[in-house]
Amino acid sequence: MGAREDESRRRRDAVFRATWELVQTEGFSAVTLRQVAERAGVALGTIFLYAANKDELLLQVFGERLAARWGAFLEGSQGEPALQRVEAFYDDCLAMFFADVDNVGAYYTLLLRHPTTKFPEVVELRARLRTILRETADPVALELAYYGVFAMAVLEHVHVGNETRTRATMHRSMAILRRGAAG
Image (cartoon, rainbow, N blue to C red; front, top):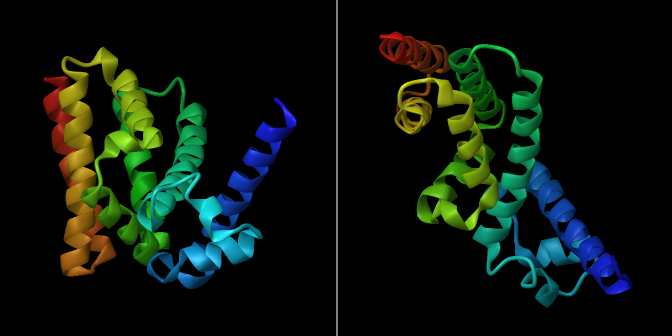
């Protein structure tokens, strides 16, 4: 890698690190590109080398963080039965959601407004889940069903606001999927 690529990578890392720090301290919706540039020590225009707008920057930064967390999670669960791995993965997703409802909720809201094909971390993660499920009769349908169960659990929590009820609903739904996949 040449000096120019090293410098570009350093600036990108500084922008992404500054964005993540601001999300943690200020919250997803309060982050501004000006704050990111100041914290990263770059010109405001530099940010646009890495993202077209604030939403895209936040999605990329959050997506990378999620991909790293869940990549490690999936690596650590190798050897376990496929449905158990996928259910544990989505249970971890729900745990992360409850640990930071506002920021994770804002992330999912942005995902709904933007096509996921722009964000390779999301596409790659869903492909990995399909790979785990490949021993089942219809891995694509099953992966989408599990994703749907998780998404509906998040929506239920948004409307009801009861963590215990949301977890119970998701676990009952996954048990139904598991029985259907075994049949």
